[in-house]
Image (cartoon, rainbow, N blue to C red; front, side):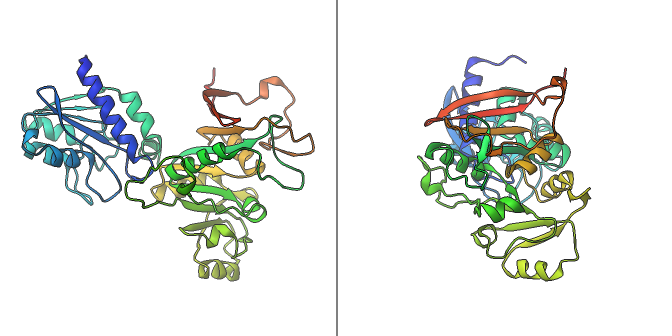
Length: 375
């Protein structure tokens, strides 16, 4: 389908609006809307958080009577179901909008059907404008709707020689402040942050979002949404005073052995939730972990973990993106490795990655990598 230059400009504007919900809409998708009439913008809106009005309703409220006969540019098909809010397709029909241009169809079976409802009301509907950009804005939502599992990012921080900590475990700090601030943004856009018991006990991270350290505000009303903190702990040996348990926000411990009732009760008394999952040999099944997080409506999941868990994730082919923060320093061959993998004997066994993005953060580099497509 061919679109005019103005169509592209208005949809790009809608995408820019949608990005404002990057840290706040979870588990809903990030959506933006622009209303135009006679070539002029008469209303704009974006979905700010789950349970709040959707992007279309915000834009219609701004436009008022000017919405009648207008064109609506929406980054996702207007919904046709009643959830915590009424259907946006009905709102557009009632407002008298004449044309709707959407970037992509809604992959959620519960919300799809808006385009058909609009056409039945005599509204012209076109789809596919800047669809790739719209899909890139919501990788987790799309993945969960298609497979029931979230989009998985693996965050790693390393020296130039690929080391993540000294042999003693000391690791603060390899990267500089700019890189650490960037990780805060990764956490903020994630539904859940996952780590292993070893990291939880040895490094004692809280894995919370601390926007006071950011260089610019990203929350429209100052309300910070904390991701679910998840610890993979097969035998429930995480101490109850671990910051991951005591910090603000929810903590979930996933185990494989339901026999540790005393530890379970102590952790639950400290405010954590405990869930038993299936085992994969002597470890928690990572497939079961992702299935469970998908059931909990997690869209994007960030793994911040040690080399063993990182290696398991990579070997299983479950990491969609690797975010590697590399500092211009050398820690030596005795320091801990980036990813624990079995010894590879031939070049044909190497795990190749595709570089998607490279940028400077202070003195450090951030590499965004994805599994290389198979030949």
